Image 1 (tube, rainbow, N blue to C red):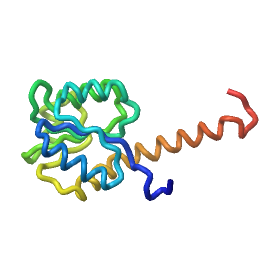
Image 2: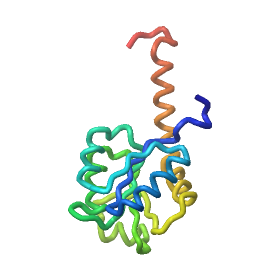
Image 3: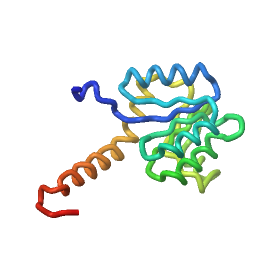
Length: 153
């Protein structure tokens, strides 16, 4: 498989609106992301807990029944602090305002709905770029340590 066909990263998306989930999933799949999509935040959380290390980013609506996107963000970060979390909302939110109102919840970004797939893709790539590079470097170093230096682990 050439690098051009290789998936960029695995994402988890959740919105209680099925149509939004489908549009986002299809658009992100076309942009070479692997996507797990949910309309139920509780199911999303269960799936995340089972595969926390395989996701680079969680994209969640803020307003959902049972668990809000803010509560989901907090729980996701408790399981894997390295995963990026982006919240979607129909309203404009500034990062500084959010951190004042929810100081204990770390969110990596916000997108305002509706958002185009290209803008969303650019936002995701800007957020996961550092994480992805670090992960690849760690995997590369582990590969080097497995015998190239003659040392055994």
